[in-house]
Each structure stands twice: as C-alpha cells, then as structure tokens.
Amino acid sequence: MFELPKLPYAYDALEPFIDAKTMEIHYAKHHQTYVTKLNEALDKMPALKNKTLLELLGNLSAIPEEVRNAVRNHGGGHHNHSLFWTSMSGPSGRISEPAGQLAKAITENFGGFTKFRDNFTDAAAKLFGSGWAWLVSDQSGKLTIITTPNQDSPLSQGLEPLLGLDVWEHAYYLKYQNRRPDYIAAWWNVVNWSDVSGRFKV
Ligand code: MN3
Image (cartoon, rainbow, N blue to C red; front, side):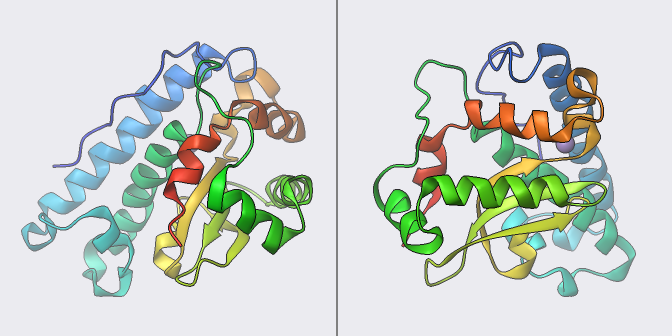
C-alpha cells in the first residue's frame, strides 16, 4: 500500500510565500486523497500491487483499462506531490540556486539560470486550467521545460522530473486567489535547489 510521505518541514515553514493553511489542506487533504484513491484502485488489481510508482506511471498502456485512469490521476498525484514537497524548504538549509552538474546543464540548455527561470515562469503562468510546470531531463541528460495537464507525470513520457510546480488553484487560491503569477514569483523563494540538483543524474 502506498502511504503519504512525511512532510519534511512544518506547515508554516514556507511562510510568507506559501501560507500554513494552504500547506495543511494541500498535504493532509489533497495529497492524502490521491494516496487513498490510488490504493483503492490497486485493491481491484492485485497483480499491480507490488509495482513501484515508476513502473506504474512509466508504462500506462500496460495498466488494465479498468484502473488506468485512476492510476494515471491518483498515482500521478501521489508522485507529483511527493516531489513537490521535497523540492521546497524553509530558510534553514535551503539553497537558492542550482549547483554542480545541474547548474552547468541549465546554463548549457537555457543560456543561464535567469533565462531558465523566466521560461519556466512563463510556461507555468500560461498553462490553461489545472496542471504542472516541470523541469525534466531525458535519458541523455538534456533538460527541457514542459507542462502536463491534471496530474499527468513526466514519467509517463519517459522523462525524469527534476522540479515541478503545482499550478492547480488548490495550491495557491487561499492566499493568492486568481493571481497565479504572484504565486509563481513567490514560489521561487522556497525552491530547495539542493534537492533538485540531487535528482539530476547525467
Ligand atoms: Mn496539488
């Protein structure tokens, strides 16, 4: 059975950029629901129960049709949010710019960190409806910025998610209402590049 991972900081750790109430509802209610519903779907398909999220999401066409959408939505929701929480941190220990190989790759692929950040911000702001903006790498280590609708995971496109931004309204509405660009601008302050850089394997 999949379980809600422990949040690596307190609900108020990301204040004032992301408020404690949003974090509490987002983690304890929204993320928990994805986990619960993923488990409910897998209860109907015991053959899938030993598979990892990567195995499930990395080959959706192999999932029986009866539960495929549930695995895609709730398995994706579980994986996306697990990555989202660890990609952020409170001020202590937070590294505010990429380091090492990832810093080098961002410069090579986007022409510098500022350009990367502007492109990512633009993609997240323009994404219509609910979904995610991502920094992903392919098998060769090439980096791109993509968006996915709903809870679709980059894993289902054979891409490795390094950094993801949740732009569902539930991620920001309490504090920012319809001002998604303000939420995105604030979010950059809490990205923990040490975690993101650690995911990049060339
Ligand atoms: Mn969310």
